[in-house]
Image 1: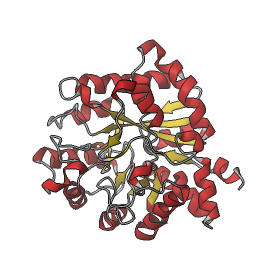
Image 2: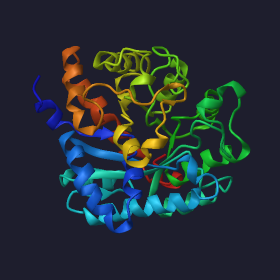
Image 3: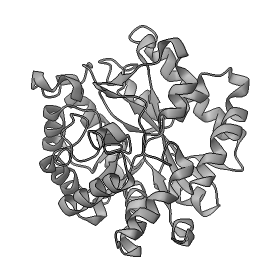
Image 4: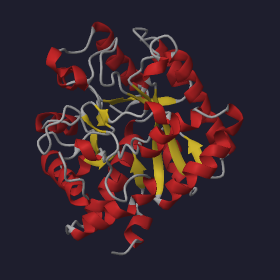
Length: 348
């Protein structure tokens, strides 16, 4: 297959935890480490738009969560400032399009799970001032705003603070990310949402019944808001044992059939290198939420492998327009319309 189509595409990765690895270095190394370790991989994968989640690992929760959140946000600003010829930190859709148009990689800051916020909804405006434009309110477990998908047995919806957080994020122009949120929480968000909802890294529960995936009804609900579901590439969330590109394409095709071609994107969740960089060998986990932690799609262990996705979609007979849409066109359209636009400034 030709790589020409991939090179023409706007490639948007809605979830890469590389900021964890960057922030683990001394501050004077943040920009250089990104340039030497991650920038070549992003370039090799053709990435034009990268959402950078701020993920706070267990050792920092709860006491050190806010301090770690601020450190990672600062790391994002410094890596962008130190590599201004190659990347740009974006606050709205116009920034994204300008940076991409200049041949640089557009970076968008996100908070994953928000443990540093606690119940203090007013701090959403604080992190918004610091450049955060996407946010999810839970990880695998319980948060002050709602339960992560690992707590689905509880059957819970959002807390009162969680309901306020949805409204505040919509007011500020922060995209609400439902990935990792429990079933009841996702349904609650879809009842409340007046702006498009994003799932930055979630695949199809109809194809593989894992709590980290989304049911068809939820996928249709996200599409109905005008949002986008971005397929997670983490192999154990896609199938019990068949870790292949064909299985990944099955998830793309099912989500497109359920949501429509304009509501599907990519959220690869490349974690192998991040885990290797941030977890001591003596502490490496064998499983994550009951699935193997060291199994990856061949060739898709990191962003350099992204052209393989284009080739796999071509082999399945996808049209050029549909491939361009899921590679990044849909996420770009959503960010252009919604990112960083306060609710008072939206067109009526």
